[in-house]
Length: 223
Image (cartoon, rainbow, N blue to C red; front, side, top):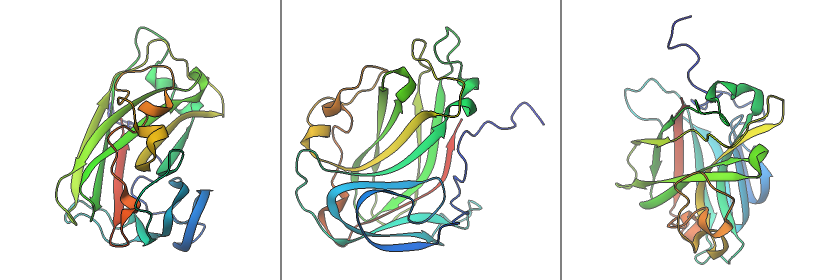
């Protein structure tokens, strides 16, 4: 091993493993793993979707697969408590190198490749359940429709939010794709703080507003 070994905290970020099957149609509610391992799909009254492992990937980057969402029934106006998310849950004992809840808490960078027919602002949120659901979020923009783009988002370490050294959920990492006003009517939480529902996805576009919409992701690294 070298000093750069094992930096990536994400498992299956290249979307290569799909042990439960490679495609699920008519997904309209709940938290499931309908395609690739480790990346869940979570929604409540936010359209109907086909979720699949795709071979559409950014050219020349060495990836063979991506995670794809395809809207088959639209919802043009999400009610207050409704949402659409892709989500990863990371085991707490794999995150001890972050040194959270100490003065040495490490800053980290999340990077990924993303593509969508729907341009605009999207939100990624980190939520630490062990620290009473403290959270932090970052916005990114899909600038060009149907074009693979690489995004990099950096967050500070949390010097006062513990991650327990156990097999429980250490961090919930959420790519918001649609958010009713109950999650988006506030101001985006850009520093570690107590959970505020209305600040979780402020500014998020509604990916569910057209059956022409899709969303792809691959190459996820958090290091």
